[in-house]
Image (cartoon, rainbow, N blue to C red):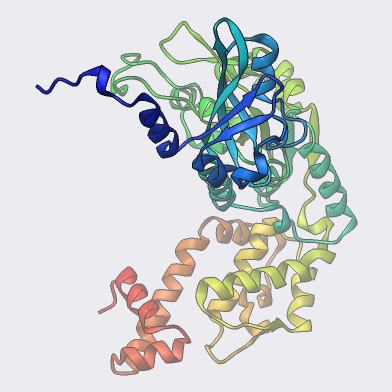
Length: 460
């Protein structure tokens, strides 16, 4: 171990070396609050040269409205810690610490150390912006997806905009296929909660016991198969954001009572726990059922109904806004062009007339399915949807049959589209003697897309 004699150390030289080497900005003012000394890091962080700051007052290097840590020290004769300041002209954000300089019991000035956190702040801001964009990308729908210019849809659009400005509970009512989830997403995306989570729950898809644990979470050991450490519920996941309870009419009276408590007390209790957890969640509920009838039949709590319907919004069926069909068809053509790699440019007047004469029991979902199926029926060189591509609308059938078929189509579209696409690709592939390059060219897709689809459908 090497011993160093303190008597041989050049303290002034050591202090000067430390002062010059410090990465944080150091500034010193006299008892009048005028700068008398700064280190090289000060110029790098503030953007002010040494000669320009000497003699200037303590407020010279900070943004207007900021409180100088030097002046605070000179007034109170006490140290100041962890004060965030914005500097000028660099615009950087720093955390400042300052302390009095006392010689022989007299205040001679103040010394401050400024730590640059602007890089951290920039990274934090970028992270928050990235998270916001990521949440926006995770929205299944966006406000601009509300297609239509009819009086009926414009009235709904106005109510959606009003609902977005307040945190009140919203009840969306409308037939199946009218797009209630679209409107719920739109309310959230236009609200002050848009940077937080939007959580969708299909209440009809879960059993009563499972729904309760999914909504409110559970503690460890609360039931067989419970995860170690327990699990957050969807209300906790949606904290500060929005939870969308679709098909709210399907929940049991027991779960209704617990949901009512959440709305009233703004807190949840996990399954198997006796501890209340506060939550700040905006609730949007939706149903295609007649809740007034359900209340009379004892299937839905009246008090919960009034809690949910603070701001009721009725989504009109497509048959009440048929003038929106051309715009909807145009948007669906664009959507399926992207999905299927097609280049459909229009729909014939006769085909559009047929669509506008239909009552659409399946609403917008049925119309979307119809356009998707029509495009699949089209040959690769066809660019305009015509009546021949709407075979189900050309057949003579009773209104009852039409309604049944419409609902069957809405429920099984994905499988029908996949099956039709697979059969068409396979037929063309074999017709062209299994020439992948020619098949991709005939289909109007890239060879890479063809390989993907062939693997997806097991075509060899």
